[in-house]
Image (cartoon, rainbow, N blue to C red):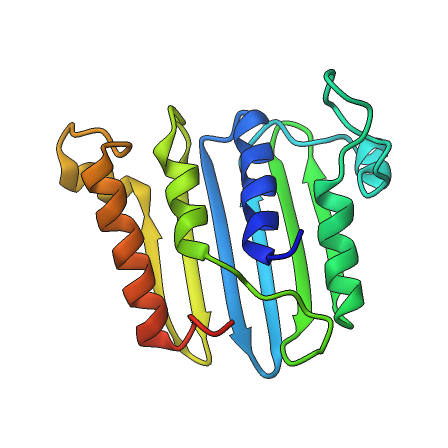
Length: 181
């Protein structure tokens, strides 16, 4: 994947498919490193499956025999002198964490985080999402639970709401200097 935001999208969609009611995404740039962590309270995986999950030929899909999302995310982190880890517990949830050297020549750009957020919240998804973005001590948090409370019954997937969310995320990224990640 050419942009890390697409990795976030892929893994967060996996969380939704795993039955997560809450998916948390942390994107943090500090001390020359970029950290991306996606955690959920979905069905989780047993220890044996976690050991194999970075192998592209390990997948829970029935429509094809390969799963490239996690292996590509791991490769992207390692190519940028970073690290990758995945922890999971059956019935509890999963956490995927990747770090990258921020100015490494092989680090993929973050990409369009606002579009990733809008794509995740715009469907028929019943999951809630918390996006926590921090750049050198500045940050913002976007929580769909708070948005839903303010909307008072208006669906999050309404076009006007999605435009508002996209614009708000973009403005916040500019305010904290995150649009250049």
